[in-house]
Each structure stands twice: as C-alpha cells, then as structure tokens.
Amino acid sequence: MGILEAIVLGIVQGVTEFLPISSSAHIRIFGDLFGWGDPGAAFTAIIQLGTEAAVITYFWHDIVRIISKWFRAIPWIKWSNPVSQKDSGVRMGWVVIVGTLPIGILGLLFADTIETSLRNLYIVAFVLAFFAIILGLADKYSKRMKTLDNMNLRDGLLLGLGQALALIPGVSRSGGTITVGLLLGYTREAAARVSFLLAIPAVVASGFYQIVKSGGQGTLEFLPTAVATVISFAVGYVVIVWFLKIVSTYSYLPFVIYRLLLALTVVGLLAAGMLSVF
Image 1 (tube, rainbow, N blue to C red):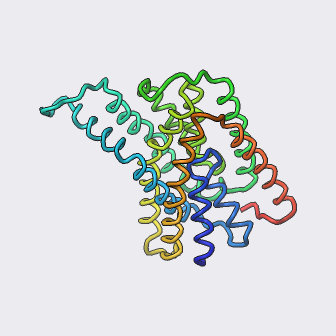
Image 2 (cartoon, rainbow, N blue to C red; image 1 turned 90 degrees about the vertical axis):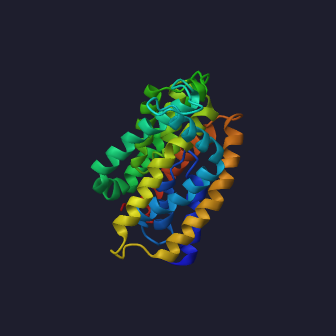
Image 3 (spheres, rainbow, N blue to C red; image 1 turned 135 degrees about the horizontal axis):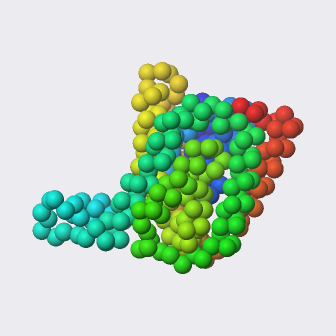
C-alpha cells in the first residue's frame, strides 16, 4: 500500500464512519475501484481507531462525566459524593457496557466469516439498499420524542444489537444504532449521540485486537496504516461537528437516497467488470 492510497482511504474512513452509509463498505469499494484491492478487515478496523480518537476528543467531557458518575454509583464503596444508580450519567454508563456485549460476542464468534465471505460486494450492495429502506422508514414514522435521559438497559441492549449488525459490511455502525434508536422513539440527535458513545469500546477493542492479531504476521504495513489512521482522525472530527449540527434539523433522507444510489452503482460496476466480487 502506498502513501497516496493510505491518504485516500483515510479520508474515506473519516468522512463515512459517522454517517449512516457504512465506512467498511466504502473502504472495500474504493480499494477495489482504484485497483488497490480489498485492504482487508484488519486495515479497516485499525484506521477506525483514528475516527474513534476523534469521538473521544469531541465527547471527552461527557465521557469523563459518565465514567466518574458510574464509579461513584458503586454501592459498596463509600464515596464522599456518591451518585444514585438512577442518575442519567450512570444509566448511560450501563447502556454502553450492555450495548457493547452483542458486537463483542458476535464479532468473536463470526470473525472468519466477517473477514471473508461477508465482504462479497453483492452482499454489500444488497445490505446497503435494504438497510437504507429500514432507516428511511424508521426516520419517517418514529415518534422521535425520547432523549438520552430516557435511556435504559433494555434500550441499551437493543441499540447494541443494532450496532452488532454493522459486522456485516454495508450496514453501518452508526446506521444500525441510529435506526434502532429511531425505532425506539429517540430524537435524531439523541440516536446519533448514543451511536458515537456506544461505538467507542467496540471499535477500540476491535482495532487493538487486529493490531495484536496482525503483529508479526506481516499482513499490514505500518506507515501507510498509520497515515490513514491520522487522516481519519482529522477528517472524522470535522464530520462529527457537522453531522450533529444537521441531524437535529434535517431528516436522514439524503443518506437513504445515497445508500440506494451507491448500491445500484456497485451492482452496475460489478456487472461491468469494474469491481470484483471479493
């Protein structure tokens, strides 16, 4: 992998990670379209650390508040300023913990399938289109009245299951979580915010797992991967700021349309022989 390729893929990752359009699908498509081939699940997982670093930076104060309150709510430790388990920050901490379990368990159980057969571009195209329709229906017909203060463990588990769907390239981590959030009646901004927070432990764990797994096997080139990761951080931070501003005002319809057009484009390029199935 060359540096130019790494820069392009880093930009693609940074732009698409937080939008409900599937970053893994775009990395897969761009790599093949430009003749670079599939960069692989390991490369994709590692450069996602850059975008998650952007999330941690942007939500730093929220993260510190949630962690602090969660620990101060532990009943068997005598704190000078304890916090109730009913506190919204404490509940969000539990939501992140519970919501991370599905993607962690399923990711380990189906790691080989995720890294091989599910990267079939026909599957990616179908998933892009199918979940575009689900997102569109959820955005149109959901009540969108609940805020993060209404979050509970049941919702956290369901949101985690939505996030776990992103193990299939084309679903989108944020798209799966946001869709479930909308179906549960949360506002567009609340669904987007919880998708950011919920992704942190899952993506960080996945990235470091791939680093350990590929270390010593020569499957990844350090410099291009590092460049792509840094680029994804910078671009990702800008996208977070922009995305959170627009979701509270506009619908997800543009993303639905984009996903459908992208799915049709992928099928057309596959039929024309410009993309390979694997």
